[in-house]
Length: 333
Ligand code: TXA
Ligand code: MG
Image 1 (cartoon, rainbow, N blue to C red):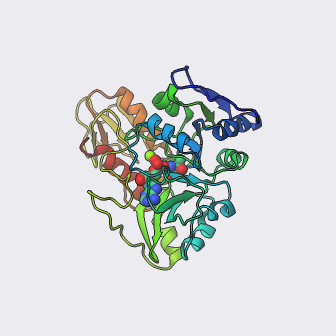
Image 2: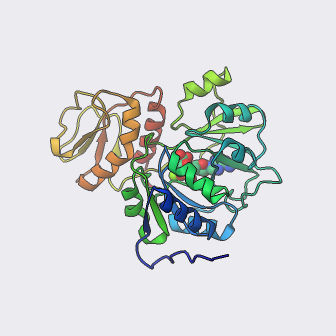
Image 3: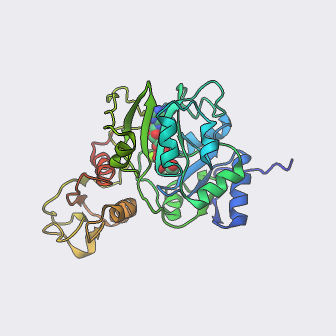
């Protein structure tokens, strides 16, 4: 068995791999050797590590600066591979069949036979599982042949990455490779549902809108029972997705020197051309989600005093966009 030494942190920049067969094979070899590899999914770029390997998972927490109490999502290439990772009660099985591959994560009991290591689950008896709908992610997962834990490939607490350049800017030398597969088309993370005790609860709004899930279930989603001190989704901390500059929501007016993140037209009064990016001039929420993190990063680089965000409607993907912006605007710890 040829052992591949993953590039050590500090040894320089990560390898930049093409999303072509040779790059995908190299990504899978590195993952199987315990290294960290960032790759595209339809939602955001993930930072992958072999979910069965506690040493690889420890390296992943370290590279992100992520607290160990915050569990990871295990990714699988296919529905059948995903169903092997945990115990899927109904209606989790029906939701998996309806929406995988896709921007949906299901939290189910891990079960005694799960191959995912305890550290990846942060010691919980439950496990978050997802089958991404992206050809490059699926090819890497299939070639790796193991579940891959993949949080968003950003420093913990920072804006999520939707392009390989975002990953390089955030994580650089700490990781072995970045598979460059263009912009993530959905642009916000997966919707997370807890399927426990016969109930289906929304833990995180995301790329699969609530209405589609409720139509499939035939009933409204339960509200999640976590609270600030002991959140049910441990990573749902108040401040997250945060650029360096302060963020102000539902702005009707832009103050002098403030950058403007617009939605639709007209822009809020006072927006300066050189300091403004529009999520979607036509008010299209799917386009806005796809642009959200790129525009936030770009405005953060240009802003002098803060980023003001135009009002965004709460329906459809607007629920996830507003959730991310509210956390970007939350007081920092
Ligand atoms: O779209 C996505 O979901 C992306 C791509 C890469 O797949 N991944 C992602 O991972 O957003 P991450 O780690 O950034 O966010 C995962 C969230 C965290 O808030 C974590 O606390 C929650 O999922 N989570 C993971 N396992 C859980 C569990 N067993 N119970 C409740 N929440 C869980
Ligand atoms: Mg994240």
